[in-house]
Image 1: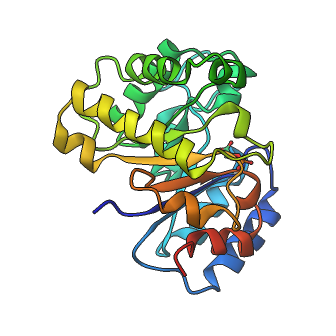
Image 2 (image 1 turned 135 degrees about the vertical axis):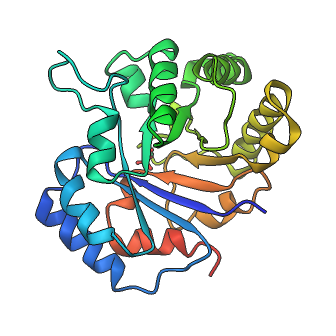
Length: 248
Ligand code: PGA
């Protein structure tokens, strides 16, 4: 039985005071103990966020990191810095990093390896663009991204995969539960082939792309959907609480 995983990717949203408000609101609600709840605020709010989530049911993650520990990389944040600030998770290879900032599978692979070496759990994002889906290439794209991003990684027990079709991110058009399930089942089969059946059945695969309180239940009902990675709807504590309680 895979533990449900509800993750919020705040992207470039929220100041420190807005972060404090959000976490206080969420902590005042009755959070379930049978799910993993993750928030990923911007770097500038992580320090304050860590102090507020410490000892609660909320886990903390960052949205990106460089793979080196330190060096001449102006504007970047290293795994040591994320550990230092108390991040348990890091989102890697989000489609906005790939398509706006030019990250490729080789770079993302380095980041995943580095996160694992520093004992930070990566949430590795993959997903096809609209033209790739229309051309019937969804599975090819997902396979290529998955295998290249996992190259030379022999243990995937600390990794979570997020399937996020680019056409569904921030558009209001979510993948149907059936579309999500088809790709999730495929990802799990690839992991079984590349690793083994046990690793595949333990792996959590999140769906991301226009998840909201109205559609989360149907998406989570799919056999191979183990959680959701949410942008827009994760910015409001009440909406996020509803997502966490998808089964209520
Ligand atoms: P969205 O973003 O929920 O706003 O579509 C999801 C994501 O980018 O992780």
